[in-house]
Image 1 (cartoon, rainbow, N blue to C red):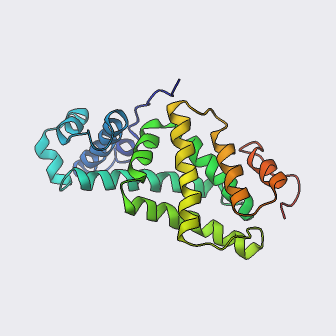
Image 2: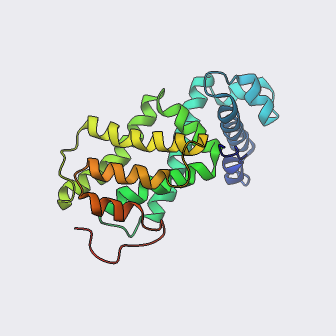
Length: 220
């Protein structure tokens, strides 16, 4: 069975000490996350989002031009928050092999623990070029780090970034809809590392180590 969609008021919680306008905008973002998770991006309506937020439709248009603008803000807000958490978790990891593996597994873990985020990201990834571009830039840094460290043997270009990023999104979707279990992140990470030219035994060892653990020796 798939995981249960969890409600979250994260963005509203972050603005509870700010002014009314900031709090209202954050409530709309949280409401949109919940509606997008249930209905998908296309089926969601402004009326349903404002009803979820317990606001009038007119309030929506004080903050967003239309649903398209809100969709982009929601997706980028989620991506930025996940990226912040991942940066914090990977601050002391320099090895590119470990960074790619840990980043993939940590992303899937965060998004599948907060399913409103995960569903919003998954559905927006394929329809919002801005989101794919931002995610690609984040991933590209670690791929280029690996080439510079001599641990990735394949040249980094836009096509490679798309392929590696798509593996993450496909694994996240499988994890959320129940066709894959907690192993989805490790499977995706192992495939990514092998695609990047990492020795298969090393790729498997790094991808399947405990998420909070560190390798006992050098990866190169």
